[in-house]
Length: 77
Ligand SMILES: [Cu+2]
Image 1 (spheres, rainbow, N blue to C red):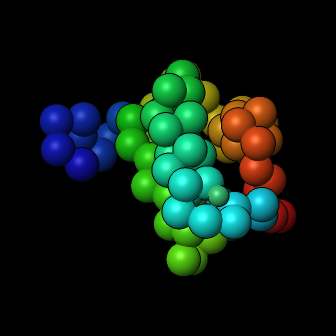
Image 2 (cartoon, rainbow, N blue to C red):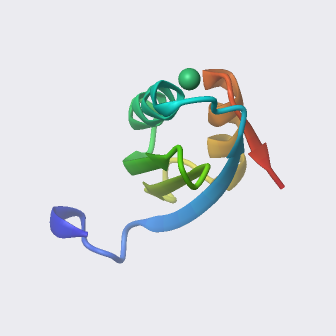
């Protein structure tokens, strides 16, 4: 967790629909990193997942799911 410390962040993993190649994963990852409250984002095309570390005082799961949709992909629930 490095400089941010574990106490001030939460983590989640979304299953993602709509990624067709590594460029999709890179695009989603870049979009998430530009999203308010996101500390770290790691998107895997192979696993169809987005692993996000975020600041819970700035964002939450629903807001992050909406951000994924805005970037152009879908969260599998
Ligand atoms: Cu693609």
